Length: 279
Image 1 (cartoon, rainbow, N blue to C red):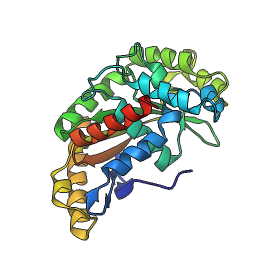
Image 2 (cartoon, rainbow, N blue to C red; image 1 turned 180 degrees about the horizontal axis):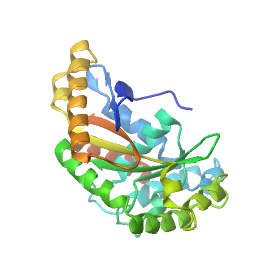
Image 3 (cartoon, rainbow, N blue to C red; image 1 turned 90 degrees about the horizontal axis):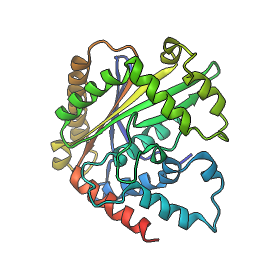
């Protein structure tokens, strides 16, 4: 496993949903934007490739495959409102914090080269002694927390409806690599003959919300004052999310990730992606 990157500022597991307040941290009096970008791109191969493709990577085909991966993410210049960067961030967070296993490649879950990924923003699993735990992620890679909360809750309520879930399960099943070790177990779990009650009892939803934080603009190191202010901000937004969500039938893990700023982060991600495309 990679050494951990994210700073866990606050973790509350005594509430529903629980709260993970994370930060990229600081280095040399700067928010670790570029370090975050480099870290996210370390996950790009497993985010974008199927299980079989990962297994077939060699020193001879690595560069060509990574160039193909970068090109497949975006084939247009319209980066600012696209969701793949947020999905990559969620992928990295739950891989690092919960050691989840990607079940399908999200890049190959797209309808066309210029279309954002539809459906759940992450499809991961955790292997337990009793069953396969399904993690169906939702991301709002936003600069405004109020909009992020409103929009994700609307989607959460939509995405647990029976017809929607069944259609998504069909799409996911069609994307499962047959050589993946857990393929048959997951296909059985998602099969129409399996009651959604049984599926939901083994399912959780990691929710990642990003936003531009004024707290980050006032600090350049992880001092006590910063920890205090950002912790209060996390708890305030967590309460707002909980109040708006109300009762919900599935376990939710809420991840809050402040940015300084989304626009600057996207510029760095875009620059990195273009470098990969030109390898």
